Image 1 (cartoon, rainbow, N blue to C red):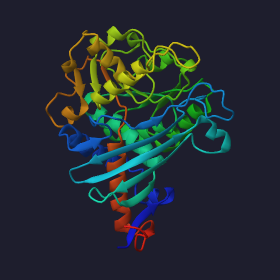
Image 2: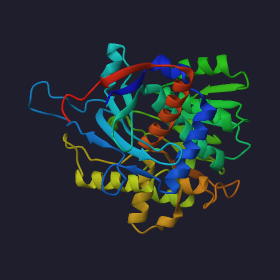
Image 3: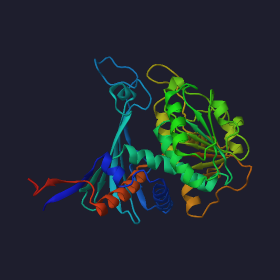
Image 4: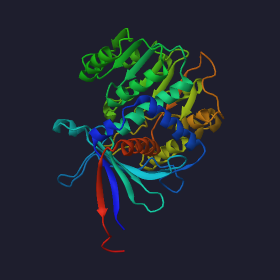
Length: 382
């Protein structure tokens, strides 16, 4: 039996609508609804694995051995199944190395394979840098549609890179009153921050003021919505202080949210995309020991792990940490008051890559976009 699949390169994905912010948010809503109904599978025996990651050491005596010598150094396979209207299996492959930038490449290079649930055969192979960035950016915007104040005007983008650029596209779909943007890069002279400022000025005339912030504190204070998407080395992590956030603020973290004053989260509304995933992160963190390969103290820097720590320390109940999926499905409230401070951890799941990849694949098929590749006419061995 002949077996074909559709290959979509980056230009094909653009033609298929991968950058459509509104549709991506709608797809993420469908995804989280299915997640809340448990119509999905992730990796691992408890279906709670973000993926299987190769952990590079900090040092090695072997010549040319790959090292963890920059932010987000990883090789990762992220398998999943998603039910409902998607009924698709597959995985995202994730390769990342900050040194790619010196070669004129993106830090991360991603692909998504969509697979027939029953046979495991590939049905599509997709360029996934834009796919992954858009689904990542759509998730905090989806959360903001339930958790941010409807009159939010000041949006702070901490980490003005690709992820927050895609997030900005999506925030503007659900927060129509935003007229001020604060940008926090590595400095006020950060090229990425200056590029983001220029891009916003060109494409969003409704934004009346753009501020380049000199410090993390400046970026957080007075913001109605804070969108964190930093990728930094462990040595360069800055500590957030929860006292910086004003009453009514909503904070969405997709990257590094380093805090030492854990107990102050107890005065906020804590929300997660997948609590079990952060439990697994904490378990893995503990198993790796208190110091890294270089003898440095290890500290977690993911917002959802702070919540797990508070539950494990019996300082709050598990029920105090809300699930975004329950909010989407109407079994838990969104924002309760105008004054509450919302802290929402968005770690991302391959379910989102599958769902947005599926919808882009369907769009490509309808438009006749992509290249059909043949795996075999007949398998050589059966």
